[in-house]
Length: 159
Image 1: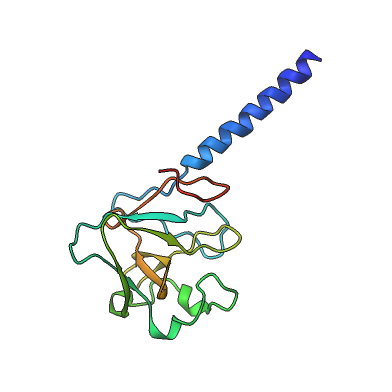
Image 2: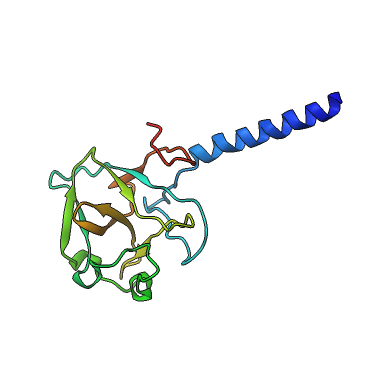
């Protein structure tokens, strides 16, 4: 009986320990500061809450092509063209909104916990975000944004 209780306790401790690890499992930028662009349709961790750290006094531009403005980036009707790698000249897309340093925002993620990111024509990662003016993309680089630790179940920020 004691052995069974010990095994159950150890199993519960491992599960709880994994939960703590999941809460701290936030995206890590590479040496260039870019957050990874996951393979298309790959299931994985999602990071919803982000903070603008861009030092530009003009703020961080959030851009979206006019032809994609009426679609939901995470919707089933999102055109495959939007996710084609190294295709879009996002820096030339119109600015939807501007985020200021210290401002928080939420990324758009798929319902099955995929982190959505696209890469532009220069291979730079772009994160889709939700704004009051619709969806748009911001540059996925640690010079501009940083992930906020969040509860893996509720996705509420922990900081």
